[in-house]
Length: 146
Image (cartoon, rainbow, N blue to C red; front, side):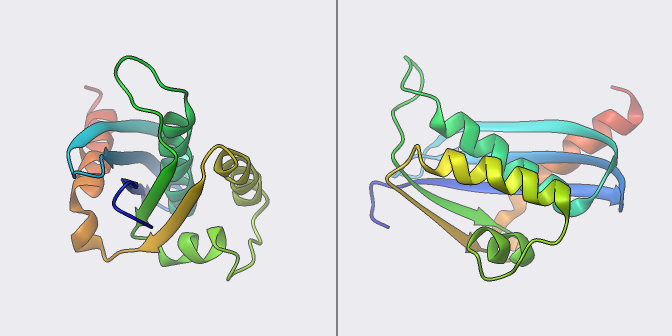
């Protein structure tokens, strides 16, 4: 990857497994300026792994949309996730055994065709603290009813 790559930090979390779950992601420009972020409640019977997959899927869907007035046409991405399992499954190192995760993986694979280059990296949780914060803010709001 080069300095023209946009950077995604994504996270998903579940309180209980399965349980209440949400996703969060942030998109940075090659100059490390925040371009966009999102957090979304996923429901109350969702696994942690599904939430992790949903986060990167949601971020990639945003990035795959064609250029608009507020978003540049993104062709290269570095995707940082704090789930080593999901990274290894997305890169083909590990096999996916769960049917629901396989379905979302297929959707992600189709989205990857929209880009010239995409790299998935595992990062420790402490380097993914803002995406994690979005997940927890969203979960707190959903669980408290706000």
